[in-house]
Amino acid sequence: MSDAALPARTPQVRGPQPVEIALLASVFVVAACGLVYELSAAALSSYLLGDSVLQFSTIIGTYLFAMGVGSWLSRYFDRQLPAHFLRIELLVALIGGALPAILFLANAYVPGAFRLLLYGLVIVVGTLVGLEIPLVMRILKRNIVLKDLVSQVLTFDYLGALAVSVAFPLILVPQLGMIRTGLLFGVMNAAVAVWALWLFRHELRRAGAHAVACFLTLAVLIGAFWGADHITTLAEDKFYQDHIVFSASSPYQRIVVTRGALGHRLFLNGNLQFAERDEYRYHEALVHPVMAAHGAPKKVAVLGGGDGMAVREILKYPSVESITLVELDPNMTQLFTTHETLAALNGHALSSPKVKVVNTDAFKWLQEGGSSAAGPPQGASAPSGGSEPRAAGSVGADETFDVIVVDFPDPTNFAIGKLYTNSFYALLDRRLSASGYAVIQTTSPLVARKSYWTVATTIESVGLKATPYHAHVPSFGEWGYIIASRRPYRLPDALPGGMRFLTASTLPLMFDFPLDMARVPTEVNRLSNQTLVTTYEQEWGKVMAH
Image (cartoon, rainbow, N blue to C red; front, top):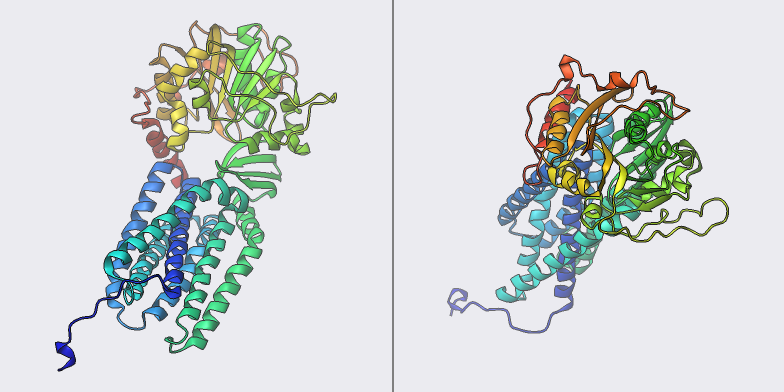
């Protein structure tokens, strides 16, 4: 009887063998690594390009498409499957592991090519990742029946994705940073290649060459991991120009403080928040028109403003009894409380016994009636005088404030954009006393004219009066603010002493808008559409393009 007449043999059902266990474990690792590269690209594009929803959607969509291409291409790999799998693992390890470092350097040195390089790398890495699982399944098919093969491979694939999706924002990026996280998982991919080299050493034709490739790949990745701080410094020194005195990654943002000709400057995700040389202009304009107009504010809330500069200005009013600072990122409040140089910039305002710090999302805090426990930044020292760290009690559901200062970053993405919606301002209205004032920093009415007036329209949509004004801050240009209140706003007759920018006589000029900043028709910014984020990106994008 010829071989062709023999019935096809099906794999026998038996317990898992060591080779199979090793390959299934590798599926867990390669799935985890693949998701890390995808999340790194999406997070970096969100940090550097803004609009997190757009960036995550396009990066994930492109990555999944590339994985589909890789899966389709796997049909052309017929022979020496272990060797192909090993080579692909090394390529994924090198390109995927280095992806965050490459993108950071590209943003600093060749910003014009950043998008092209970003999507090019996503397509290459996605295609290689798409090749991995089909090859593993075809190798395992030698000994496992199809129904068991598919269920086992997909189980380990999904488990690896779950582990990384939780660890990436909570552990990996905060503890290692983006560059080291990518390199660590590159090392893990290379380790899978070494594992495959050992498992299939008897099948590989040029095992020695493969061993050398594995060694060189691991050496490059481990060396880069060891020198990740130098890579970060090289990229950020070029990008920020000035000397970096502090940098850290939190689950929420990249915090960088520089020192140069303009003094200290604070950047969040690459966006300038203040420059020491002229921050007094911004913060005096933000705080004093409402604080002085109220007369004798006792209870004040600051939403955002974790640098403590707005708190510094508020403390100039003796009538103030308490200030509740609501800042999402505890790293910010801790930095500007404990770092001697930076704490000096805000006059050690965050160590005042009048200040209570709540590290939570401002939207959530308003929804819950301000009931989050408040206290000093984690790790902060006790206020002078030897008192114990403060622990503020819960704020009642009906608690209101005389003045609320809203000092959020500009609406560069939907996560921040929700803090500029009519839903947010309706919650703000509930926390404002009948005679109180809220003030909102509101981007540039000159550069982003439609964005600015969108905020005014949105405030008015919830029944509050909107009183717009502006000031010139050299680091930002012409900058806008809007006062929200139930009663009509009245200019104050006097300001506290110690002003460097504002005077009672020049204050009225800030409420006058020339023709090129005058009001234009705009829509209400709602949670369901967040039109402000799109408008903001269009207006500022034109400026950046030039």
